[in-house]
Structure formats: C-alpha cells, structure tokens
Length: 496
Image 1 (cartoon, rainbow, N blue to C red):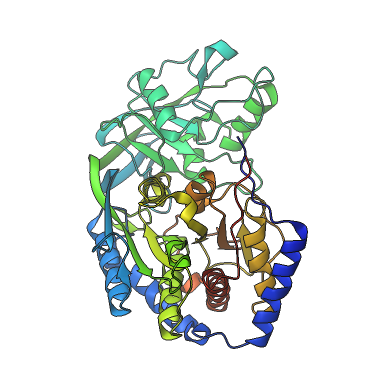
Image 2: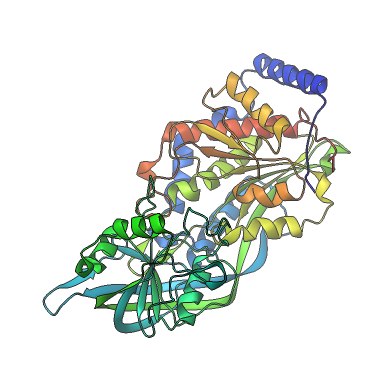
C-alpha cells in the first residue's frame, strides 16, 4: 500500500499565493531575529565537548546533553511533552569501546603499530578480544553457495583474522541482487567459518571511497561479545597485503571483473586488542517539550519538530564530536523553540520539540516516539526534521516527493527569506523523518548540501561548520514551522 498526500491543484495554488503574500506583508516575523549563529554555535560547542564523550545514546555523556536540553526547555517555560516529564525512557542495545589497538607483524623486523582514529576504528558493536593470529583476505566476506559465490570456499580461516570489503559488490550474481548484509551479519559469517576477528575495509575503487568511520549501526542478530570488528583504512589494508605484491584496489578489480572470489592467506600476523562493555538493554531517553496551541480545536493537532541528539561516542582515547551530525540540528531545534517563546507566538496548533535518542543505531528513538504517541497519528499535521545542517554550501529539503505540499511551503519561504534552497529532492522520509513518513504523516527533512565530508569522523568539529549556513537553515525551518503551526498549512486526508 502506497500513501500519497495531494492537495487539489487549485487549492495548492491559492495556498501558495496566500503564504507568500503573508510572508511579504510581514517581513519581520516575530522571533526570527533571535535566531543567530552565535547562539547556535554555543549549543554546538557544548554538545561537542569532550566531557560529553561523543553522546553515545545511553551513556553518561548523552545524559549530560539531555539534561542541557531539558534545562533549556524549562527555562523557556515549555511544558513537558510526556505527561509531567521531559524525558521518555526507552531501552536500546548498547556497547561501549573502552580501548582498542591493532599491530601488524609482517616479519620480526617489520612491525607496524596502527593509530586508532587515523588508521583504524572499531565498529560500534565490536566484541572484545586480545590475541595474535594469522591474517587472510576474503573478498566481500560473502558465503552464498546457493548463488554460486562463496569467499570462504577454498580457504581455511579457522583461528584467523579476516579482511573483507565492508560493502557488497555493485554487480549482480546470476542476475540476482545481493541480500542486504549488515556488518554484524558479515561478522557472523566469518565467525561461522572459524575466524576470530574481522577487519572491514571500504571498497577502494569507488568514486569517493568511504573513509574509516565510527558507526553504531550493526543490524539485527545476536551480539558476539568475543569477536572484534574493526574498520581499517585503505592504506592499512595495503600494509596487510604487502607480501602479496598487489594492492587492495587490484584485488577488488580482479574480483569485480571476473565475478569470482579471490581469497588468499597473507603470510603475516596481527595482534588485536579490544575491550568493549556490552549491554543488551540499556536505558536512554527522548527529550521533548510542548508549546500548546491556542485554538480550541486546532490545539489538538500537532506539529512535531525533531532532531537526533545522539552521536557515536568514544573509543578509548578518541571520541567523535559530531558537530554537524547532529549537534547542528539539535542546536537548531533549541533555538527554534526559543524563537517561539521570545516572539511570544501563540500558535493555533500545538508544537512538540523532540530530540531523539539512538538515531545512529537505527532510528530507535523516533520509531519509539511514533509507536507510543498517545493520540491518533493523524493528529500530527506535519513532522519537520533537522539533521546535519551545519556543513556545506546550500540547503536541501528531503522527502519533497513524499510530502509535496510541505516541501512547497518551505520552498516558497526560502524564495522570500533565505534564498539558499536547491530544488533537488526525493521521497522516502529520510533519517528520523522516516518513521513518521512510513505511518502516513507528512514529513520533510532539512539538511545541508555536501554535508558529509567529516561524517562520523574525529574531525567533525565545530570549527568545520558553516556558521552562516546553519543560521539560514534554522531560520528557514523556523519559518516553515511557524507557517504550519499558525494554520497556513492543511494536511490532506491520506489516499490509499
């Protein structure tokens, strides 16, 4: 079943003209001028501080960030959104990396000690381990004998460390698409074949190969608490492959061109040491406040403004600041809330400002919020999400094809005020807008263009952000929320 939201063409044209007239006649919207880059960056600076340890959802650092947001809401005298509480508890899978090291022994005299954060990082759901073992390269790390492809068929990896490509092949096998296999599943396949640990490397022949990233996305399945999972750089992989006489890119070319495995023992050893603390059910929280609507009927309709507060945490002596992802969006949400209060806005619809937990692990906070919403979901008029809005050069608004009326509202506002929004968009929700979109709620997702150069990297720091851009996107989002909440946007009935 596909859900569509459509205004009759004439109604949409009238709405657009009225919206633009309203904006031009009221060029100074109450509260708008309170949104400025200095205040936005103060929040970002706090959220990215080392004492918050990268805001891993459920960690003490995350709770410090949550308390900061709660105190901001309280100072604005916004009502708690969860009864008499600002926090909504939920339970998530949790893994904290205490320490990690990786050493390569090509010979007694050729020993390379790799640097955490530069040469390798741990997968967020790495298991623990402390051992030295032989190394092997096993292509894409796939075992699909039914499809006639098995990277483990002609190699014994028992007791070994395997290097595999993190992503699947771009080509099809026997004209069939590959199953979507997560890092946890690839690790399980390696363990089933006797391996003791796994080193992921991004496909080197991609146009823009992914660097090493801190990621707490793992996929479904049981955690193997005794199986280390690391993500190594292309250069580190080449160090491991040195004795074969070929680079990692050449191995990808060989496998891709022939569409057959080319697994090989590497004739060297590596020492892995990872100390991780795993908890299958760890409490974390969404944080939310509400500005109640002023109209008798419309106050029971809701505009949800969302951003995820979590990032990917700390690993030993390094941490991932997450300035763009998503201290930027979290800061914007707090400043939008403040603008409504400073501007003394009395919206017709109620507005819920919510910072989601555990987006990085799989949108768990936003899914939980939607699934436990105490009112019928059609009471939510719109959802506007902010994620990665601080790095880049212009504004994108995703899910325009899923919520064209809402996207058109943002576009018309941009043409009057911010003049930085590109026309490119697509459907499917995106990030924390996805659970809302999938339940039939019109949703859009504000993000900057060219946003991901520092994605999940230790370099995602406040000084990399485009201060002018974060101010523009926050103002655009505020004005879009404003127009939606004061009633200049109508949600059409869902057509099945």
